Structures are given as structure tokens and as C-alpha cells.
Length: 362
Image 1: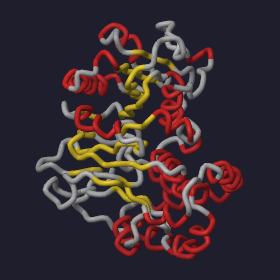
Image 2: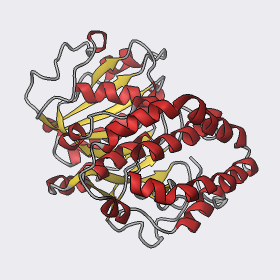
Image 3: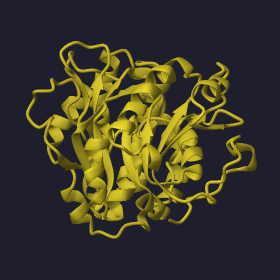
Image 4: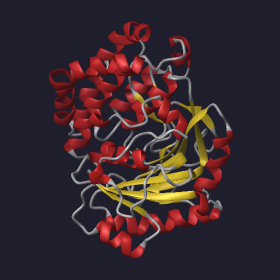
């Protein structure tokens, strides 16, 4: 397995292990964490149970990237979870930057990416592992349930994407008995809160998340790159986690709305193939008005507008340069890629602009 990259010297984990010297492992579980000691206290025991249940403890490493925390996370991990590898970033790099630190150090042929605010079902790895044997699968999206909600409310059951540039979270706000929730299927992207990636596929499309996105839609962008290169993503409902939800950034923070609005444009204009971009660009632009109205009604209009403005004023040139790099990854015709996308645009527009009141909005 070819190494994805090298760490900066200041970012080597203090165990002294080099990511190139030991034999490759089957799986590296990466957990980025910023001031998340209390969350890790809940997350790590459930992860250990899932690894033990799958009988993969000897073939797996857990790697926590401490993104310059000030709550004693690193010292606590070394004292209470000595088997966990710890990398301490010398500065706060955000979610995507912290994940990339972990990817450069990972030794697994598969990467399990987890938020620090999830509780892992004991069947999580056991249920996802059969998909690792399918050579066309680059990522396995897992079912994510809303924490603290009675009745089994779904947060994510596979990610879709539309040709007009709207990423969709199937099942969001629905009950677990809703049609399709418990059925495996091919999808477009897996949520970064709990997803598996094939290391070789990541290496083919750049090996990392796109760091300028920071947080939100970085998983959509990576899923898009993998689709451009001809890889598939599969949703496995039996592999499940419970997500406490936006414990780091806040459920309705300005930063979340800003990043989401800005990053949606970066993903669309850098990843969408030229023929599809020209065909659907007018519809993409028309989506702005209903989405703006929806955000104003929910009190998040300012973050949405600022995010769109930041894309135009600060990110458009870099996105155009990035587009050339991303489009060089494409190995499938635009029609094949379009066939993987969801075509029900009206429901997509209404669902993102005016979400149902019962839906979890994380």
C-alpha cells in the first residue's frame, strides 16, 4: 500500500511510531477532536466494543488527532487509553485539516472516520466489513441516528446529490421504519461523522479531504471525487451510530450556515463536469431564492448570504484552479455520473429550503 503522505515533523505522534515502518493494518479508525475529552469518554468505549465484536482488534488501530485542544485530551488519552495513537496538531486546523493529519499517519488499508460525538453500535464494523471485499466500493456510508430523541429518528441514511448542486441526506428526520431506511443501496457520498473509505481509492483521488472547506460538505466533495474516478459508495443500514450532533460547532451556529453555503458552491463548481455544469447552471442559480427564503424563515439568512458572498469574493479563483485538478480525475462519462444523481429536483429544492419541522436540522 502506497503511503498517502508524510507528517510534518511537529505532528509525529509521541509514541515514536512511523506510519511507514510497521506492517499495514486492515483498518485505521481516525477520530479528530477539538476540546472533546468529555465526548471521547463516551465514544471510545463503544468503539472498543465494536472492534471486539468484529474480532478485528489485532488488525486495527485507533488514531485520535487532537486538534490543539486545551482541555487535557492528550494527557487523558495517554493515561486512560494507552493503546490509542495520539497526534497533537501544533495549531487548530479544523475538521478537514485534522482528518488529513490522521490520513497521513494512518496504516490501515481501510479508513474508518468518526466524529468524537458519536456512540457506535456493536455491529458497526461487523456489518460494514463484507462490503470491503467488493473491488468497486470505495466507501461505506453508515446509518446515523439522532442522539437524545425518542422513537428512533434518523439523521442520515446515505447521501445523494442532484445535477443542480444540492447535496441530500436521505432519511433525515424520518423514523427507522420508513421505506428504504433499512435497505442497503448505492449512494453518492457517506457522512463524515461515521464512514469507511478504501485507502487505495483515496490515494487515487488525492488522498485527503479538501482542507479549505474546513467543515461541512467536505465529505460530499470527497464522495464526488471518488465518483468521478469511477468508484462506488454503498449505504449499509446495519452499521449504525448515534450522533449527539454538532457538539463542537453548535447546531445552528453562524459558522455552520456560512461554511455550508460557501462550500456548496465550491463543491459544485469544482466537481461538476463541464457538460453537466453548462446544462444545469441556470437551475442551480435559481435555487438561491427559495433557499434564501427558507433560511430567513429559520433565522439563518445572514450566515447563508455571507457564505455565498464569500465564495464569489474570496474563493472563486481558487475554485477555478481546483476545478482543473479535480476534472483530471474523471474516468467516467458525464452521463454515467449523472445517472448516479437524484433527479427529483423540485422535492430536493423544497426539502432543503423548507425542511419539515420534525426533521433534525444538524
